[in-house]
Image (cartoon, rainbow, N blue to C red; front, side):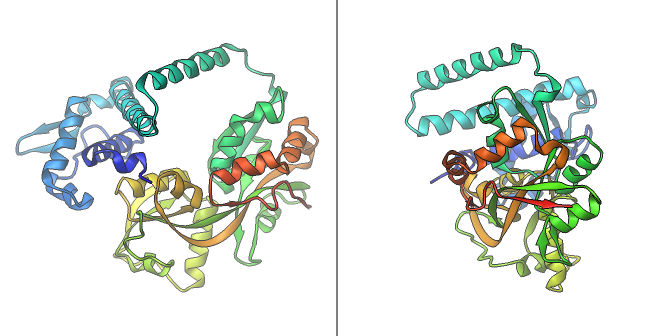
Length: 370
């Protein structure tokens, strides 16, 4: 099955990749873009394809091209308002076109898509106009990114009526630090400890000493190499990463995925050589998959659900538990108890399993630390 990214013309994929780099500050006003020939080499495409991408960005007012002087990010982007208006609009149109193409290829008529969007917007406006719930009805989640957590948050009003789950994804370590600082009610973690060869317990005890906390299992999920469809590089394990012939997109420091990777490389006596090529650091598994799908990276480490979402290949390396870390003082909260019961239901299992790459056999299991 072909993913939307696969059906998007390559020049649009190149333009979108540059838009994202401008949006997240990797490219700033006045920065020079790669030459047409260099970028064609990176994307393994023709010079004409890159020129078409640059022309689209020029039309959107994001870059400027001058004969003999190359292409640069537009100086007007130094002002936030000048940057965000064309950039946000261009990014939104790109996402809308991808959604429309996916819907039309699924057999929906244009009128049906338009009606569905209008209905969704009407419901969103109704929700947005409602007053914010009291603080006690908002659970603050901070921690590791997982698509099942996002799906669960969208359903949280049905899981725990009258309550909301507010999400912040900043890595497993960031979640535990937020708990220690009282800035979160529960954290999502999958931190592997090299000394004990276990997940979460040892790290939780180190970062939150003397505290009694519940570890509530969401699911076990498959972690591995996210590669282009068909795994053209024939990757089988971590050894090929350290060899340095592939562009690798990494996760940010403090994530459970980054911790596991660095520990495994050390265990195998591997290290990144001087010739290693990195395609940046990203904050979610979906961003890893997107970088591979758009050709900005040859491989990344992430969960299988992200690879499936983008129609990519996957080389499994391990299975890891994803757990909610919940202080004893929060454990009795009605919404937490409702969540615990829900995770053990067939409904929860079906929702999580449908994402792909999960084992829900232990979903809802509780173990205590401290």
